[in-house]
Length: 95
Image (cartoon, rainbow, N blue to C red; front, side, top):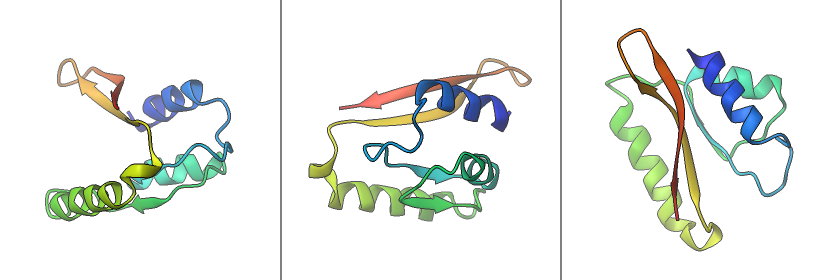
């Protein structure tokens, strides 16, 4: 599940060390896998669950609002559930 998403991300961004690549990473496995690639991230949240979801989204939203002028677009990588057992890596871009 996580490995497929990280592989999809890595294939999209071949140069994970680009100074133009700013990452916000959510989830322990994503942090570990991106750490193995030595990718730098601005924010990371390792405890994603129903109790932390609201505080994580609030923190990310506040960060993006404060730094809105810095970015031309934001891309979100996630797993889109096709069925309970099948999920597809997906990108949503906001400009």
